[in-house]
Image 1 (cartoon, rainbow, N blue to C red):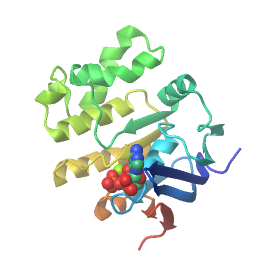
Image 2 (image 1 turned 60 degrees about the vertical axis):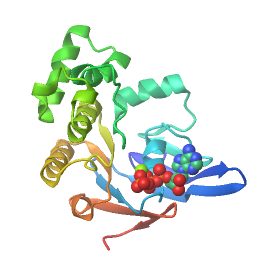
Image 3 (image 1 turned 90 degrees about the horizontal axis):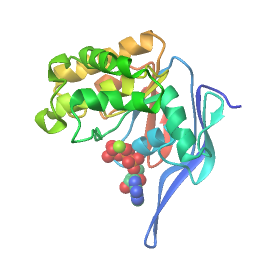
Image 4 (image 1 turned 180 degrees about the vertical axis):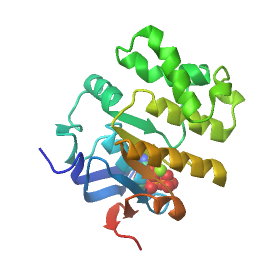
Length: 227
Ligand SMILES: Nc1ncnc2c1ncn2[C@@H]1O[C@H](COP(=O)(O)OP(=O)(O)OP(=O)(O)O)[C@@H](O)[C@H]1O
Ligand SMILES: [Mg+2]
């Protein structure tokens, strides 16, 4: 067992491309407590997405360990991970990752298929999640028929639909105008008030300042503080 709801213990993620080695993360330790709203900020390429992917079990570290709610995530099998993720974590990816042949509503329904949600509950729950992000009217449209900001919000609805205790969001406002971006952050703050633990990656200092804690990443290392 480790400290915190989320714990990265001395994690290193090393990429080898040809003869070149690059540390996406180097000896990083980080604890995030239940109910925290953590903003991760840092320059492009500093390791922010890598950090989120490790927490969500999408990627594995080369050394060190990743713990979420007392469970060691980095040693789990893909099958176990998919199930675990469905119950515990909602992820908003940096590049949405919506399925192009499914409507907005069907995309939002996907995470419920991994869990044994009763099939007659899936549509209404997905519709509610879309309503929550202001997209009730777009339910039957394909991703290609939505604006970038709308696709972003569908991705957020999909991350919320299983009501997970932890939400990981990678630049969820990156494609939104200022007003829509602020609405998304308000939504995250509201979710945090209802008890969800939130890890938000953002380039925008203004948004990061709304979080209860800022973690700064640079060259694969963490530097905490408000400056
Ligand atoms: N599959 C890969 N192969 C090789 N290098 C990679 C790979 N994925 C990421 N990297 C490198 O690891 C470093 C960290 O990448 P990461 O995606 O975590 O950065 P980031 O902080 O999220 O950047 P951005 O703000 O641009 O999204 C980068 O230098 C990147 O080039
Ligand atoms: Mg990134």
